[in-house]
Length: 542
Ligand SMILES: [Zn+2]
Image (cartoon, rainbow, N blue to C red; front, top):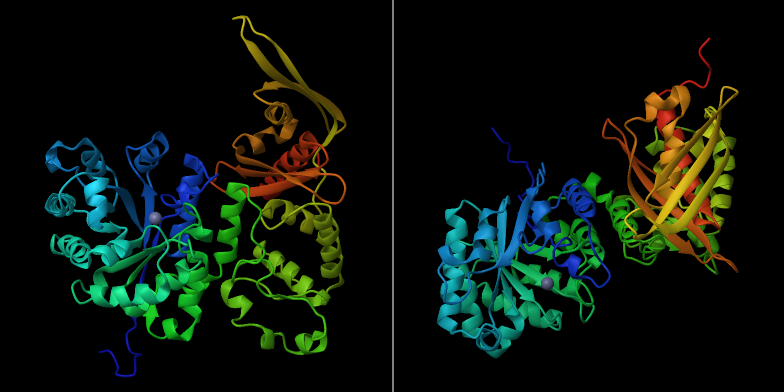
């Protein structure tokens, strides 16, 4: 029997992520299939309830993405239009594709502003309502959880409240689990959202309402919170606030607010646990890395500077009690306090990183200070270890114990040549030659590649003598280049993501004035890390 002392049940708020659909509309963002799979897995690990994958059938990437197996907790959601006006649900190829998609839920988008019904859809208000009713019914009949995005809901409500409400009510009555009120143009202000949602909940229960806010007045987060106050129980948003124009509601800011601010935390619970909340800075950075964007240092909660205090006139007070300058504990969101004069702050970062790779050291251990100095020196030169776990692990093991010298690359040579091939086509061919010394023996390998780095990688891995068996299953899964403007001359930072036959993944980094040099370092780190984690011995067999 349950005892009477259990705390009052909190209301459940549901999080819906549209990074892969609305976020993919961001200027300059072009997700590959690999990116989409990685982001979906990351969102699932974070505890998001719904992950919107995109439009199955609309483009090859999304179609392929929906065909991939995706074991996940979250409800995987397909997005698309309601049936077209004047067609039946059984005679609409777009709708059929959506209904056939391998998805747990379907999110339809429909007009809810009569002006758009007339001008954009060129149909009648009644036919638009019929399209909503039929489409929701068809998806329900196929066993899907159904949502309906009411496009331009708030502008539509201002122009014709009865019609906007009729759209919402029609979807609800047809069996939609969620009716999502969209501020599609992003111009609505928080007090308007609160007032209008307050009217809508008189017609559709708040437990069945969602909010989809855009950030065109920098208030998408505030608008989402205003909608929750007025009764909605689903919030749509994106990681790092990606999205068309100025972006969508930023889940990276919303999640900590819902978890840590009393007004919300005391009333609501979300699918993100306290432990998952601590992953947020890593998730945010990982997305930036994928997009090859510099992370926003000043991002609330997760940014590098979110808990950085520059010790000026308040130096001694900050050092005595940093919490007096913090609205929440940085630890709660997986971030770290940075008091910029304090050596201690750097040390705790290094200790935290060491802990991640299974090394426990006392903070007063002199080796921690030495490692910190090395990290600082290398970061000043352009290295970044936040997204290069394997390179950090090698650096740490080299400083603390030892990493064997498995082999030595004595020389490499990379040639890029433009020439005509046998078919008379102009092609660019890269050829790499690598000389590797293993146990006093020189091995020479050559390989062609579709680019200089690929050729170098192929040559390097062609013959590693007795280490070959360890690297057979090693695969490069991602390669990113960033030009850093450090001081007077630019340096290049290369980050490589690798995977092995066990499914383990790691990332390595290299920095050089030369892109090949930086790539070589990152490739070497990846191979050496693989040998190290496989327990390869540097001692030649007797
Ligand atoms: Zn949108």
